[in-house]
Length: 451
Image (cartoon, rainbow, N blue to C red; front, top):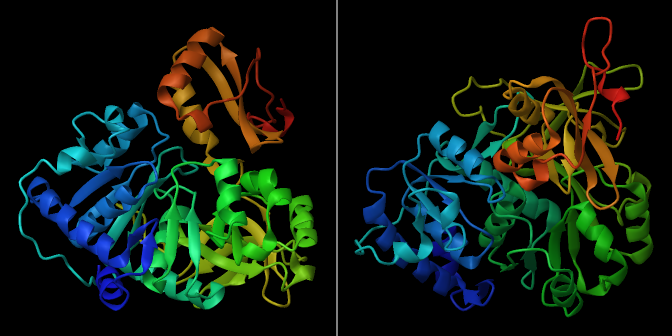
């Protein structure tokens, strides 16, 4: 953790996370590591499950300083889903916040860590680029999650490129409202650490709290998804904000137009877990004629459009020093990464995203992969056919709805899904049919399924 050590030496009294200075966080991390060391002496990979908090960051920094690979678990997953991921990655030690201990059997809570006998340790200050720092699981179109190994090289290249694109100022204070188990939240923490600036961590979205912090000038930077920004845009004082990083799902043009009229410094962005957050970004106030775009590539990022039609629309491929080399346990993907998204580049190098990965449902910034839920539903012997599709929703952008054919009661099916799936993945409605519509080859016609 050379960045933390460096900033603690150069700016010991400067605010880092909430009310804690760089020197204080560095001291807490070293103490935490002394108590963690005896618990994970023979472990190369551990897991961390927590809501957003300064304490979560301290535990994470300590584990990283002890040279461990840290699987960051989504706290919205069910016990069933968490157990599946922990088993798949062969993890024996899971550290949880005191509020989430019941989600994982035999986990070690943050308060329990302090009861272990401390062991003097020397934290690693530097790591080779290829060493894995954290692991984030992301669902795939095959229905089974894939594990993204985020290396120190990816993180290092990201914070440098992001600084060049977004800038860094002494009074910067990021509001960390997006989850730190996602790249959206973790990348903010890493940028803040690298830039020697400040971040304010909150555990959940609270509209009044958010508005107070922004409008009082306590924070001047925030990363949001469109569904959250829609709720507060009219109430923001733009003169207190340096930037709003906006991404995570399709961004409605009416929202962008409103933000332009309000003078809000919106930086649209496009990225993914595999590229450790941002790949392209731009400020809509600087380029008012490009608001339909998702941005220009960050330094070092190359965008390729393959299999383009006559209008230049095709598959979006990435080349980037922020990209993973391969999913864990799988072969390297090669010289460029296929995003699965469809779009085009204009003459000025701005990327336009037309379609997300086919059939993916994006609800409140969370990706929902129909195949994952369908495979689960098909595990029930009473089910003949099923399909999960998106329904437009004013609050979440999209919500999943399920169509099924089979001899099962709605109550049984709903209880099964409630037990097995995180809340955001659960269908908002279930429609029973004698038979789902199909084409001549027998493929279910999703476009004909509407809520």
